[in-house]
Picture 1 (cartoon, rainbow, N blue to C red):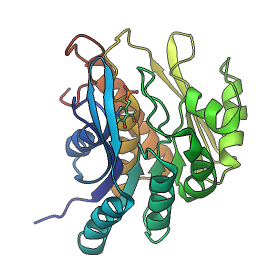
Picture 2: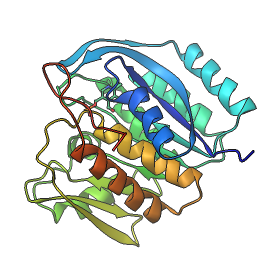
Picture 3: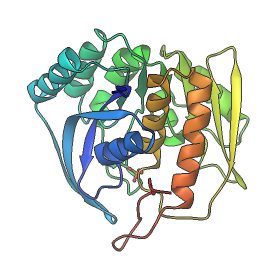
Length: 260
Ligand code: PLP
């Protein structure tokens, strides 16, 4: 019996099933890897927004991580919502002992504006988590938060990438999806190689879970043994299809679709 690559998501739960742990596991299933989860926070959430958010104790996060890593093993890890400085420090400490690529999605604020990371955790993300990343995947709001660089036009993406790389990840994927223009443009670079990734923008507002899905798809590619540029290109194709197929649910912003 062939054993699929194993991918771990360390992230928050979205009760609405569109983002967070739930999006991560759906992505992993769709991409043929075995998904596992360390839940960092529970959110009460739906298409209209985040109604409540409860970080779990560091001990609970540590125990889940040890259970998975010490028995099943991981070929790649993805981190998402980490909620607090204490949990960022805890997860960074755990990741330091793991020999597998790590995709860090430095989740800050939800599409509806709900804070998913305490402002007091920013230094820990910069100083402890980003140096461990094989790929860091900030969007433009997260770039501004982490580095102070404001991206206004496409050419600014390079400046943003340099500022993120200064914190120590091997690769930075700057997601320019919120810029104006007919294409959604991202820049992937390790400071030497540079890939500009373009996809036609789909006029679909049901995009809840986009960032989680992209980062999980990258981790799935890395776990299968693809190099970073190919993992990211494949992940971008996957998320572009998922956005195109996003569907209305509830009264607000619906989720991307993993069954397309
Ligand atoms: N909820 C959780 C638990 C998340 O991890 C994230 C994003 O990473 C979100 C909500 C926000 O998702 P979106 O901004 O796509 O609506």
